[in-house]
Length: 318
Image (cartoon, rainbow, N blue to C red; front, top):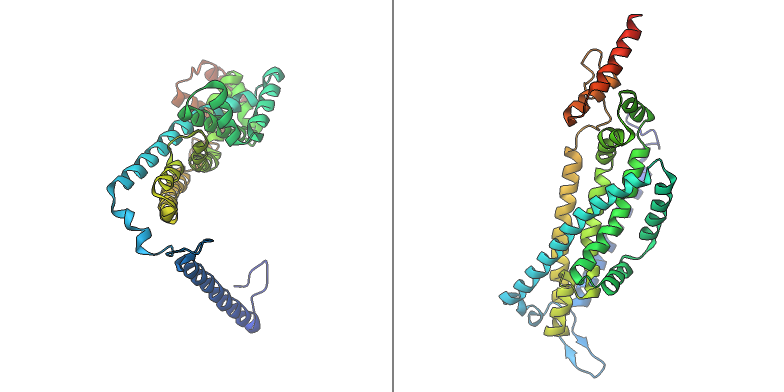
C-alpha cells in the first residue's frame, strides 16, 4: 500500500488545490523579492530634499576595488575566529567541569553548581561581557573570551549532564561491579558515551558561540561587526548598505562552513559508545566483558576486573 499511515492519499481535487496554492505562493514570493529589489534600487530623497542614489548604484560599490577595505575585513575575520576558537576551547573545559560537579554525589557540590549554572544561563551575554570588562579590567579580547566561555560552558555542562542522566543505570553499576571507583566510572564509562550522544548539540552550540562574538563590539573589540561599524563611520552612510552586505556574506560563509563541519562530524561519529564493544557477532560478549575491553583501551588497572570475572565464572560453574 502506497497510502500514508498518517493521512489518506490526496484525491484529484486535493491535488489540484495543492497545485494552485503552490503556484499562488510562488508568485507571491517572487513578487515580494521583486518589490524588495525595486525598493532598494530606487533613489532616496532625504528630509532636506536631497536625492541620493539607490542601493545598487555603482557609486555605492566603487570601494570594492580598494585593497585596504579587504585588509580591514580580513583583520575583522581573523579577530572573530581568534576569539571564537579560544572561547570554544575554554567553553568545553568549563562545560566538562560543570557536568562533573552537577552530577556529583555530594549535595555541597551539586547544589551550588546548580545555582551557578542557572545564574550564568539566565544572565544576558552582553551584560556579562560588560561586567567582566569593567570589573576585572581584562581588556576587550579577554572580556569577550571569558564571557563566551562561561555562558556557553554552562549550556554545554547542562547538555552533558542530560547525556549522563540518559544513560542506562547498568553502565554505572557495571563499572562499580568490576572494581572501579565512582570517579573512574564517570570518566571512563559514562562521560565518553554522554559526550558522543551530545556531540551534535555541542557543535551546534559552537556555531552559536561564533555568532555571539559579534556582541564583543560593546567593548570595542575589532571583530567583524565592529569592523563594519568602524568602516561605516569612516566612509560615510553612502556605503552602509555595501558594508552590511559584505559583512553578511562573510558571516554566512563562516557559519555555513561550521554548520557543514558539524553535520559531517555528526554523521562520522558512528555508533554510540553505549553499544556493546565486543560486537554482536562475538560469542559470550556480555556487558562486563565489553567494559573490560574498554578499560583496557584506556589503560586502567584491571586487577579488579579479573577478580570480578573470576567470581562470575565460578558462579556459572556451580
